[in-house]
Every structure is written in C-alpha cells, then in structure tokens.
Length: 288
Image (cartoon, rainbow, N blue to C red):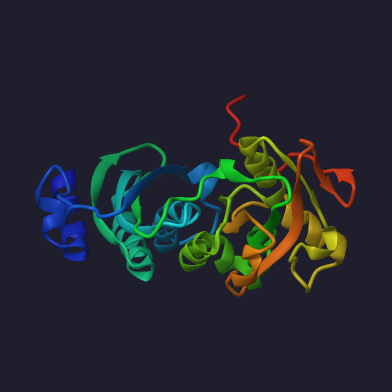
C-alpha cells in the first residue's frame, strides 16, 4: 500500500475532516493555550511485548500527561507515524483514538510515512480557562512537595510483574488531578515520566531551590520489600504521575490520591532523610 491507500484505514476512525486537508482547522481557543510535542521510538520507548494498540495509546498519553502537568485540559492531538510495517497501522490508530476519547480530546490529524524504525510524534494543544498554567519554576522555600498516585508501578511492570504490565503500557495521565492541583494553588508542577528522583531535581533546579524528602512518606508499592519498592519509586520511570509544590495552607483542598512527601528549602540541595538524593532515573543518552 502507498500512503494514500493507508489513509483508508485512518479516515473511518478519525472521520473525513481529519484526513481531507493539509491542516486541521480548530475553533478559536478561549483561555491560555499550552502545546507539547513528544517523539517515541520503538527500540527506546516501547517495551517488548506491547501491542500496537498500546503503542498508539502511549504515544497520545505521554503528550496528554505533559498538558496535565500544566493543569491544562487537553483539547486537540495530532500524531505523525513513521511506519515500519503497514499491518501495524490499524491498531495504532485505534489505540491513539481511544486514548484521546478517554481524556476528552480530539484526534484531529497528523502525518504518515515509511520508516525503518517505528516512530511516533504526537503534538497536543491544551487550554487553561480559569487561571494560569502551572510551570516548573514557581516553587518557594516553605512550600510542601507532593505527588499523585503510587510510584514505581511501571518499573514493576518492566521488571516482569504482570500485575503492573498495563501500568507500564497504558499510562493514565492525571488530567483531572492536574486541574484540581492547579486550582488548589500549586506553585510548580511537572509529570514524573523519568522517575521521581530526577524529576525532583528538575523541578527544584528550575525554581532555584532545594528540598528535603521523607522516605516514609513516599507512596511505594506495598507488595514489594521496602528497599526495593523505594528504589523503583525513586528511579523507575514511566508512571506519568504528577510532582508538585504547594503552600501548607493550600494543601487542605488537594484532591484525593495525593501525598505530601517533603518540603522546599532555600538551600539548593535535594535530600532524602538528610542524605543527598542522586539525580538518577531514565535519561535519553546520545553517547554511543
């Protein structure tokens, strides 16, 4: 099949408007728009054993997670696909479409090409209509450090624990939580895609502050030995939970499912129970 014939697979899923023009025509966006783009490659981003449906889901989910980290509502997604085999397209498109629908956004088009390695590039537009997006750079000394969810689930799945395989392959962006945390008064926020420890370093560096975390407050998997569960929580990526800072007063209206794990300090050190926490986690490395 050539690319025009492959469109016959895409159009019944997305609708004719998403396939008929070179650009998606969007209605006027009311509020503050936020935009994010992610590129995923099969060898580095899709664990062996993932279905093509899950690959499509993940390609959209990682971008929606970025929008959620700003406290934005995802509105429109595009997906460019570098396809290594044409028989994979149908399931990829359905997985991407279902992820969009799950989180209230529209899959409005993209691009399609042949590629030696399956590569997906998703772009998302979100909007904040009742305030301002939450950036990484607003943490202040005295703020509390919080997270959503239980950390380490995706790493458990990657290590072969079938109970957490879907957590790894079908991440669920924290859209409603991100909006609620923003509305509660978060001073900074980001998603935890590369692991908690390195994300804490990222957000504190952007804000020019440090923090001290409490090991006992980090929500870890209860069915693993404590030390192993902590290591997965700190250094395993792929959970796509949210990391945020907030004042002690505003914490009273945080949504359920959040945990306070520490406090922001003026001294630019990242400590766990008084010891330096290394900036380790998943890193994109171009040195070969």
